[in-house]
Length: 302
Picture 1 (spheres, rainbow, N blue to C red):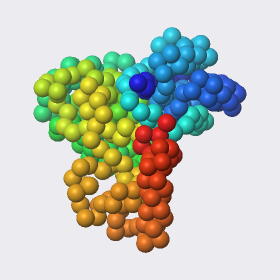
Picture 2 (cartoon, rainbow, N blue to C red):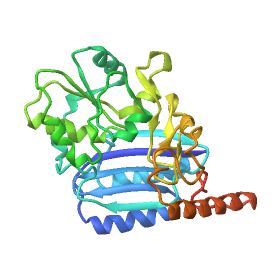
Picture 3 (cartoon, rainbow, N blue to C red):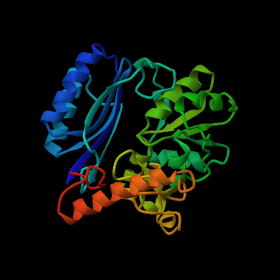
Picture 4 (tube, one colour):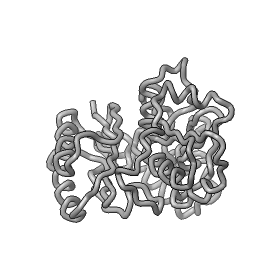
């Protein structure tokens, strides 16, 4: 069983290139896969490996960047390796919004645990915002939530500037980090009743029983598991190899769906040349499976 660990930490980071090189070697030598983003404002990542190896990297991150606890973290399990390889990236921000956060600016009073979150969003006066991308919103979201339909998070402030300051604002995202930035931005704009789901959707699905849940659907995740359900169990979605969008069982019943080639989202926009190349790739995957080998585009890549 593979352990999957997601985290973020707002902390001042120096020597980005040196730390990137060190972490890349550390991930490789300890058989850890996934992505860690480092920026001057902190760390953000999701990684996978054995329990022992994940414990090693979490201890190393804390000692290397001199902090005791992550601002937020989540753990789940996977029967297969959800990442193809280890990557450490240097970015201007750990979440791009053209807003660099000082750790002291974090709005801790705005964080709500899942049970308190349920009480807040039951209030019809509360403006519930899904800060994720439109395709994530389609996979699953909270009842009565609104998605700003923003594909680039840097454009999110344009939507926020239209909000009314006299209503409570409740925000959520996958793990919490996008809401951290949004919360700081709104606070600087004079908003007072700002709330965010502590630990994000993954924390909610892990702690709230399905019968008590206000969540509809599944939660998209940026790895080969594609989506997760309550209890952070593997969801039912797949990924279209043609457009890299999540697809449901309903999508697969469409005559525009072809495994490894296209789905209803992209069938009409793909050229015949592209479809031909994708069919060739899918044929290679089939042959690899039949011979007992692994192909890098397999979901269960090991």
